[in-house]
Image (cartoon, rainbow, N blue to C red):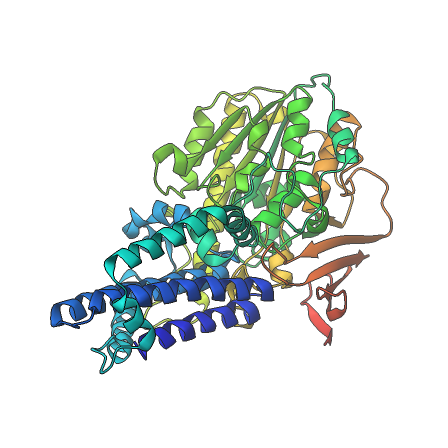
Length: 578
């Protein structure tokens, strides 16, 4: 035990340091996690000592060693999952999400841009390494029993039961303190609590997170001000492709034609593109919330007016078609689900992970969507967990193997996902055309954030306020010339007010975005953030004028950390770093 227990504490300390300095976790969260994990480690040690007992027989020792091995492997794999999920998408994976994929390991392995045999071999090597480490730190028969353990073992049976009873009574009396501590850990997304219990917040809560503002009377008035509207026969679609960055689309200057269908619409003048378009966040929660609530992260809570709610109160039918497991993905669908007349997510429909956009497309085709409706579609073709179906594996090689360790396979894998998303859009347009609805449809296609494809050695979308995580497309299709956008800059926060102004000549007072159809200042400004409830990551401001863009990044105290600029389609250049 002299090596086993210290090794567990060192493992936890390494994880806390990584979460703090690599992923920006708050100091208080790290301290709370270390304390909670430490308590679990100590309880485990006491339990193992109790199993060994006074005699320390070989059978008892072997049992304690096996249990210790299981505990060691569990925590090593737990921290691997926590670090990995934070690296790729900036949040701790939950058990509710994990169990959706455990039943389909083969499917999960096929999704990743790495050869399956290489993943399996690496995992087996990792287990062998962890086993070898455990053999060095494993519990051995103690030469002398620790004084504290000896005192515990010396307690007679009746006294032990009295002690247990005392602990139970203290626990009951201190129930409120324990509940408060649990809520604190849960709200700040402490990894152990968050992994087992998942997101704490839902749409009915008054606050999004503990640190964010309460809904104000002005927010209530904003919701009450929305009234039924005269029907105009329009269909509004927002299609969000998760992790889609704009510079991998031909209409934004990419050399590959990753979107043959959409590009044909663009070249024929039927599809518009906002040249400089950005997300309000580098993660899905922040990006989707800025789209629906037209709010910056600092002023957001889930009980404010959102776009789905606006259409519902206006008398329109509302739909959501989602690939993946949004109801369990950190409460993502809680933003708008209560205002959905029709809600579909692929994973819940099949009771296991189904991250296939072609399945969602078939559901859209089979659903009778009528005019005077608002439809939200969330696709995963470009996300790490999104399935790339075989017909769309056109850019090769798209799997990392022994002979190709460069980032080329990762880029090819990503571009194949865009090809698939383009096919889904082709299917959506064809379905609307067949039903005679395309002429009255207004279709936005956006990304919620970008994705890193090897920039600065980073992959995924948890790399702080990197410009490639903020650059997303804003594309618009409409046969109605009144929807023509004459603006060079825009953000997801601007889409909701643009839609309501152009359809109903109304912009809710509580929304912060600027409509594409209102007179705008010559200088465009929008706020961006990499922060979540658990991190101290930076916030920033994007400023655009003519064809020049500047990104200023601030730390939590408001001091400038970095200034980056670009001109036209040129590269970003860092001109200041502190």
